Image 1 (cartoon, rainbow, N blue to C red):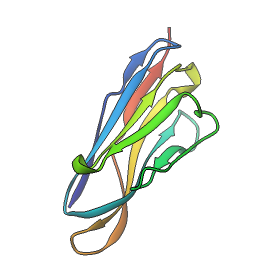
Image 2: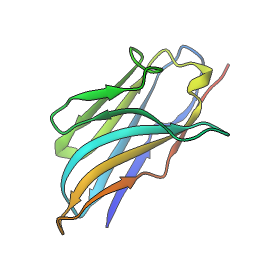
Image 3: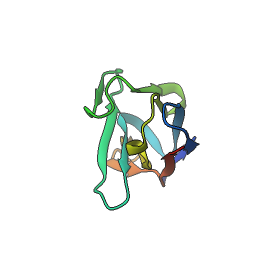
Image 4: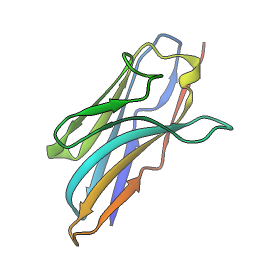
Length: 120
């Protein structure tokens, strides 16, 4: 039993900032890669960015220079700092974690999603 719980979404004006957090809990042995995806209405889910356990990051071109992913391994938590937000960033943001459970099973888990709306 593993849970990913996201927080921090909301409504923000263009040019504003938001910080999302995602905490993983439950029968976790280790977490490899954590990341964020998003899905806008009528579109497919897309990668925003990922962060490995060692701290290396990867971002979609559309968010490079504006978004920053970080993680606190001691808290099994990943963050997404979003700056200079644009209306096209409006989407449901999902946390994702590729982890090993205490039963030594590797699996990908998803959070429930949090809405981010960028509008004036």
